[in-house]
Image (cartoon, rainbow, N blue to C red; front, side, top):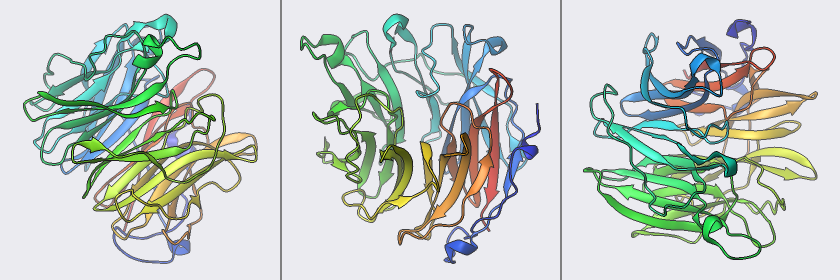
Length: 406
């Protein structure tokens, strides 16, 4: 197994500090690997950041065997690296997918919240969304519970967890109950649903956001100064599957609107969701689409909490397989990641983008990304990255790195 330093380019690309305004062509960062105490075969990384710092979570398989016991683990970023991993929950009946990934977040009151996906019928890829929480830094966890009560044997996943304004937890997920109960010859539709829990874990909301969406593209959710904003891949009656957003206003979700009208007509799910990042009323979005039979990754900015969006900025240079992420900086610019497809191989890349459409040159983070969604977050002056990397035939390893913002 090669060392990470042999796989990363100590690249230069743009250097803008957290709030400095410089020419994107002069923006420069260096990718620095961080040792991670995760067992071989670990996968499905997620990164979340709160005022208390950054949490990395992942799935670890007993003996690296996909048919064995699975555990959801997490570690926290410190000045000297990652803390020792802690196990949240384990099971032998989970639905495991590189596309549908559990996560762990910290609420404002210090409570840790995690989600995981026990299978209900593996033959039809049916599973439930379970939540659990810890009030003692992950030493013990509450019995799990579900945000949905439909009781159908179908998909409940691709969840996004957010701290609700004031207090409590918000959860977005893809829900297949209509598919399970529909008598329509064409079958039912996948929906996006939302649930809310107060500070005492009483469920206070369970509602539909959009009744017809793509079946397996991840959701994303952020909190703006105007409230919660969520993104997902919509699906219309003509099989146009573009990224849409909806806002929670006065206890109701607004009619979904497209981030951009790509008019991508596709008759199957591309397994590529959007990602959002928000600061105040400024929001950045990154997503994947296909134009002229070529995969492309884009970013766009909104200055009004997602009501309207600026001109899309292309992220990739020659072609992309998507799997994007994005993080806003204080100066209104954003750093985005995507999978570039070049010379018949994939590379994980990163670059700075500006609302005025300027881009920095691209940094190659990894030349061997494996299946999965690379993740990006920011803590102070650090960009933190996590991804799964190929490590030989049928083998992979979880990697993390940082890029320091001056």
